[in-house]
Length: 324
Image (cartoon, rainbow, N blue to C red; front, side, top):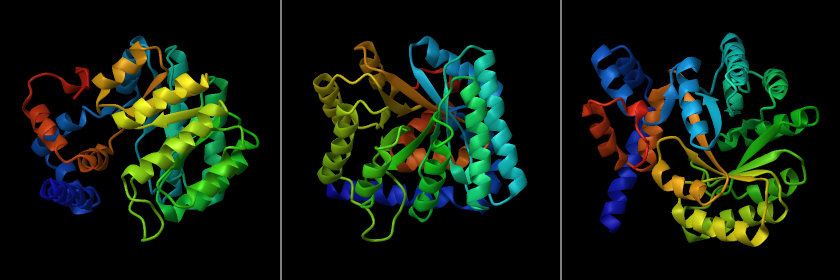
């Protein structure tokens, strides 16, 4: 078992490095045959490359009874023009969702809309997105990024929340600092998405995955549910969800949602919705799917075998049930 775990860890580390390899990425994107094959594997995890394609996926999950949150893929933008174009894309998506009478909030990385250029630009663009989404009665949820950006993300969030109440934030349970951040953020009105956290950190900044982290994560979840704070419990861990369901039955909250990424154990997710629990699918879209695909495989390298099956399958994976 230990040897298998080491092999999975090595595989995960290799995939994370591959995801960040610009030369490999450019080679794939410029090789028509390779692009086509890998894109088929990516289709399991993404809503599409365009708004039009993604609306089809949103509609399908809405019709199945799920809430949806949608993210236009991208991060670490260092050019103001690109940041503003990404902002316009999010706003166009909000309008398209409203026009088609669909249900989807917006999720985004602040570094996609200008955080690495300046906090002021990110805040200006975030307010524009929140303003447009608010007209459509949609929420906007900020995703969390690496630890070098946490302070800036929280600053932009807290300042923007003062004027835009349809804004939420993501907190990572594995960070040592989150206990303090949680105390502050949970006093605010914005929604909170709880995740375990996956970014690499310097030694001493985070807690390793295991029973201790599970206990800490569930501690945050219990506080949110007990106080009926608007929240999303984002996980693919059935143990976490079993404990969460017990807490929901105990606390009787109304302002929660269970959240899971598109393409990851969605068949198992169905049982929670069938039992009457609020469930939301996190859909990403756009052309930056290479990094996203590598990261999904890195989380559980054995998923590569599912990817191989998808690549050779004659069916359209984007029309599949996304369960495995």
